Image (cartoon, rainbow, N blue to C red; front, side, top):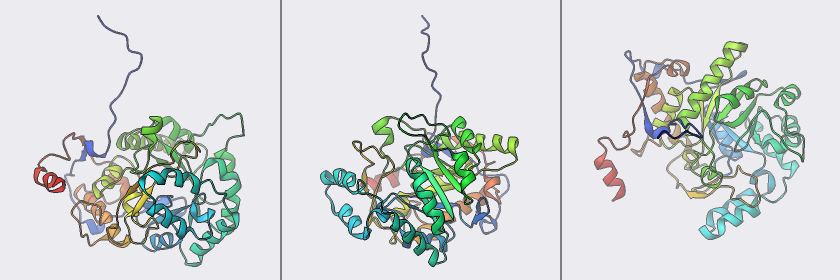
Length: 381
């Protein structure tokens, strides 16, 4: 007997389940253009360093800007809660597994010092770097004016899940349309994973959208609240919203896939799935310049009685420049990420990231094990 369905589920795909089909024409990787444009700002490489305390501080933001990317400083992290954040970062790195979750809850319960917001931004700008800063929707009305006054170039408004419509009895939700009217700098908003939410966010006039809920290495969203969509499917759905919005409005709003990246191939797949850029956390936390001292932890969710994320040991694999541009010292694809992107674009015949969006993709459930017996046995030995 046929059983009526309560819900119809569709298949969603992550990085390991798909592959890119080579193009019929190939080009020299050196001829590829990897630029990411956000309003009037053009980044030579389509890579953002995530707004997480283990990834971005003032020094890394300066270095990332020099290398052509963009690092986002979180205005609600240790950099603005503590005069000497290095001491706090050392405590987090040295805490035992049993101690670290309550320690993180305690660390982020301290108040934000508004004077430090201006000081950190000024330090980045003094070095001649592009300065991007991040806030949660709850604190945007308070912190955005401070960031603007201090000279920030880009504002990122992000939380675990962000929508254009938010219902609350306790306060009037943040209106991105109103925020857009009051600020002249580009505004990036995230995170979302669906066509509808992405389209509504774009209609508020923002400059770019972050795509991704739950895939990050230090994120516990899927385990704790069960929410998330695998990144390839989320990127494809949001890319469709971007293209439809461009047809309706004439404005092109880039989407930036955020989270879940482990190797260069993942970046390439995200771009082929429709991303204009990527935001990286755990990969860049492995840089010698990263403030996490070989560790990485989540910090997006503000609930005082739920874990903010888990701390993971990522180690230190090389300099930031080596991770982005090589030369690589490892074979797992976690270094020379831009070289991987350029090579993938070359074999797909894509001169630009927009052309890379047209690359064919296939479902490849066995891609990580197909012909990889010796690699897998070596890594487990």
